[in-house]
Amino acid sequence: MTEAEKQFLYLFRCHINNEKLPDGYYFDIGRVFSLAQIHNVLPAIYDVASQSGEDLSLYKMSAIKL
Image (cartoon, rainbow, N blue to C red; front, top):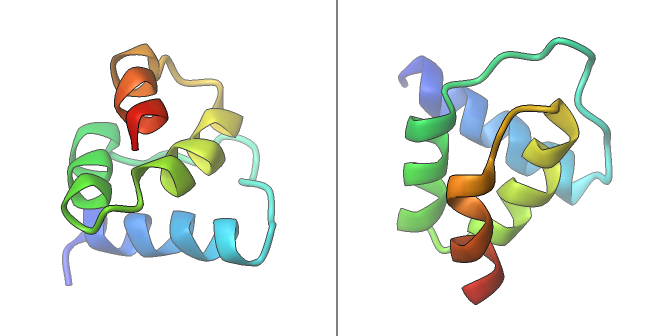
């Protein structure tokens, strides 16, 4: 399992358990969001990832469309 896959699963777990991301949590935005699109859970991952303070504007419209 790659690091991006572990990060994807962690973000998804945070969504399911309604947990917040730890401060300063780093994840590979491009790869994680690519996995989220493949598995059709982009809105869930976007919801959690938006807590990180990263610029996610490239993914916002895709998350809203789904």
